[in-house]
Amino acid sequence: YEEIARGSTHVLFRARRYGRWYVLKGIRDELRGNPLYDEWLYKEYSVGVSLDHPAIVRVESLEDDNVVGRCIVMEWVEGQTLDQWRQGKSAADVRAMFSQLLDAVDYLHHHGIYHHDIKPSNIIIAHDGRLKLIDFGLSDGPQYAAFKHSAGSDGFVAPEQKAGTTADHRADIYALGCILLS
Image 1 (tube, helix red, strand yellow):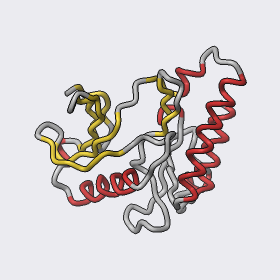
Image 2 (spheres, helix red, strand yellow):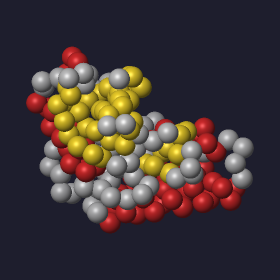
Image 3 (cartoon, rainbow, N blue to C red):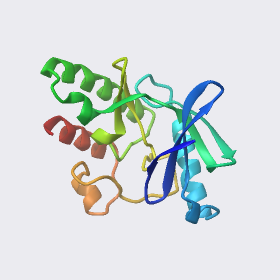
Image 4 (tube, rainbow, N blue to C red):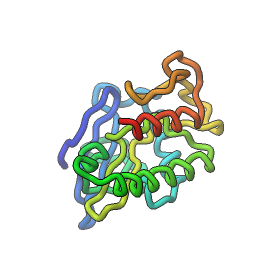
């Protein structure tokens, strides 16, 4: 197990299982056992496991792990964030990559899911050139009743999210525009 990231509510580990690398996303130790965070983790899992698109990270399972505790098991994507990748790339390369991102977001929206945290660090470009949209911790949709609050990251958050009102698919479109202009 190798800890690769830590957020305000979660911790990410890279772990080797069955001869392959995976990401295990669990709740921080001090928040484990809190029903609110358990529900949040389950919501992220239920969103992720329902998705099947080549440009969206694949969610494998929800498990109780000896090291991480209750966690989401996802595919490991070896690569770079969008900002790292696009340094020195041609406009044609960036357009082609952005096309993959648009296809992934279109898929989400057609399935009633809004990402709500689209930003360059949540977009990984694998070494083979495939794009993967990751981190559905803030995702939402009309079919979900839990955690209806405005969310997002500075620099990519839509005005209605900043105002604290419930956002929909248009917030993702706003974030895409911010990425394109950055």
